[in-house]
Length: 88
Image 1 (cartoon, rainbow, N blue to C red):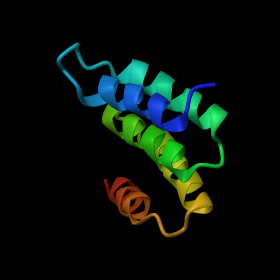
Image 2: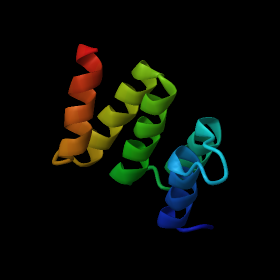
Image 3: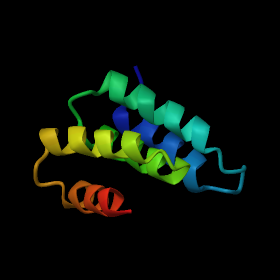
């Protein structure tokens, strides 16, 4: 099984690296895979939420940020982004 950080690297590469063409859907696939392999990691849910946010899937992003916060209540990034999404 691939390590969490390796899967995350590929997800963020697809999400933000336009050297090979940004592919948000492929990034979401990588991040979803990461949440399946590492469901207890707040980072995997935070990354998936970020990709959903970029895709414009607000409710899915909020759900993932909530999961991230359940695992790590100190995740200020998730708390701030979730609050921002709930206002928009």
